[in-house]
Length: 197
Image 1 (spheres, rainbow, N blue to C red):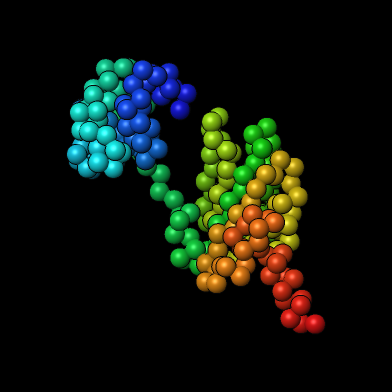
Image 2: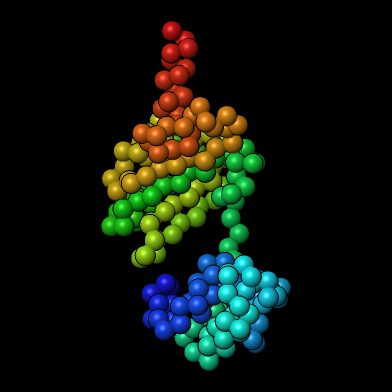
């Protein structure tokens, strides 16, 4: 999508900034107005948040509506609700995995298969594999991810980076710089072993 915006807005950097914001937030354009689903979004407030003047927003709307391919896309945009940010507040964990571009499909299916085999209760799966962004997979888990599953994910082919967002209150003691995770089950296991000895 960003390549499409780049092609149509290459001579209009301020308008492109507006179009990217609308796309990233799922805001649609219909009949000269901007909507969040069926709720009209005030142009002045939108301009303030994006950091442009209202005129730029109006010009962007006009340009999109008179450019048929853009109009087709922008009139159908919708925000996608997700549990990713609220999951730790609900006592759930979020597994955030970055995969190599060429291993995205196999990595995606292997992770889901691994979770199914270990009877990990999955609440939501959200994924992005856009050309100009890192390939990421977010999985909201009801409960705690077993340590063995965590370690197997890290050993997968095409695995790049893993972050486990957790409801654990004292996250600082669980931060592991080596793994680049916010909560490291491996470190927790080691701490438990040291305590029991």
